[in-house]
Length: 163
Length: 128
Image (cartoon, rainbow over all chains, first blue to last red; front, side):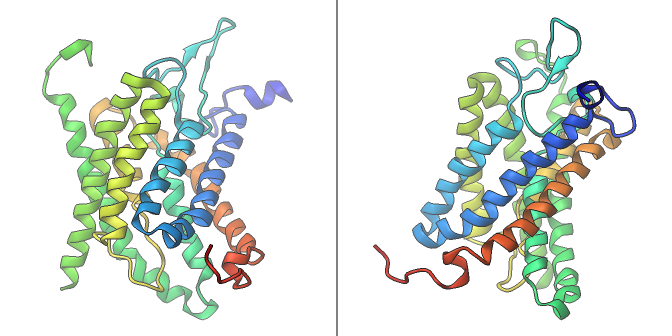
């Protein structure tokens, strides 16, 4: 059992245990945000929302995305027995060589589905159709922002040993 | 007017995505766990204030909430692909697991809301 769960599987691109921790980590942060964020904003106004950024996103960043060691070690800390360890609940594919999957993904999908489930049964199709252009605008905006930011790696500058 | 709303969403998304991945890894590398926590505080607070409180991202009332998480997610993947030559398809397994977790949490939250006093209208209306 232990052997099966913790052995890297090519089919799913991660060890089965990583799939479990990823689903659990994304469940936790999404659930807390759906339940708490709206009510804290109701109670404290914009101050509540800015507080939420620290106490929900910050705290769950530690749960989901902390990496071993001091500083980013995408490959994880090599374990004495071989292999490497990731400590965050959300697994970064191919031992960190894959593009960064942020917990924003799960928060956005969770809130979107939550809106869908809260809609009345007959109106859900219209709700989805109305939201798709906004989702598309956000994803295109994210790609442009992230892509332009990624260009800083192309400047050829080699400060402080960065690659 | 409609394109201006989508342009507004687009702009907010680009700024939010770039801010997250410009600051977060550097804060983590400099200050460790506390740096990551602090990064969430300084980035997400002002980005939430701009995108969702002031409404730079379009979210009409009564419709599906489209969160800035979509922007952060897309930016993280695009940033990895452009900066580190990462392979796009390798993000898929984690993405799928995240989507499963999100859908499960949404379903659970809908169920839990039916028993929470603040959500089913049985809470004491008096504020302390």
